Image 1 (cartoon, rainbow, N blue to C red):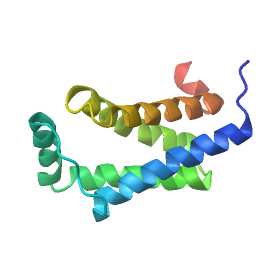
Image 2: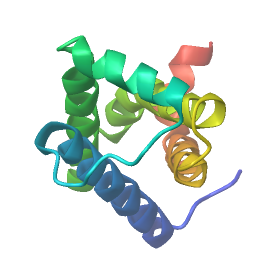
Image 3: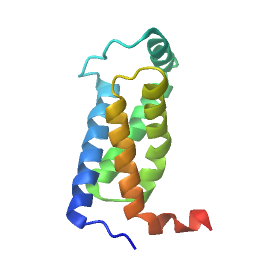
Image 4: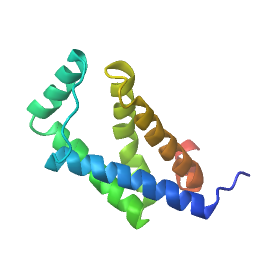
Length: 127
């Protein structure tokens, strides 16, 4: 069976957590200016902002997931709540704005590496 080195997992978990912490906090506190997006991407982003709840909810999930990853507490739970957020980030960049697609791919890869490392926690889901 494939085993993943603990130090490597530490860096993946921390890097993943820090990226989500920064971008999650930015979604709430707006300390990094939003880049210019193509029209369809901007329309979608604007709809999330104008809804009044969706973007803050999404960013709150990112923050909670990031803090759990960094604290090394409830990592499998963190991976579960972050999965739909990451899929949406990736698909946004795939279909609406290719800028940032590489970062979205890194986030998905980090999630996959950690899910593989914690695969025993998910075993009952696939019985």
